[in-house]
Image 1: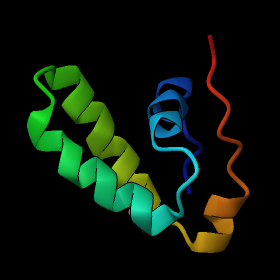
Image 2 (image 1 turned 180 degrees about the vertical axis):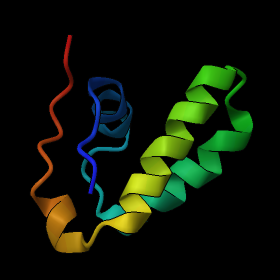
Image 3 (image 1 turned 180 degrees about the horizontal axis):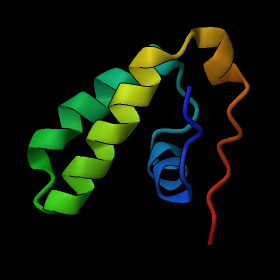
Image 4 (image 1 turned 90 degrees about the vertical axis):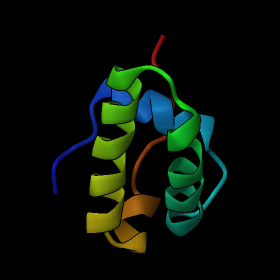
Length: 67
């Protein structure tokens, strides 16, 4: 599995506190409301990686926003 980029981690931090499946569902729900094409692309990348990983792998991801 590919590592997450800083930008992807920052996006995931918006949905922090959820399990992998909850995060996937919330990102899918938000995508239609995103007006920036780059952010839609980023969200799609995050979804692909989240859907390809297991819950155990997700639990090991450090969700700390970079400044």
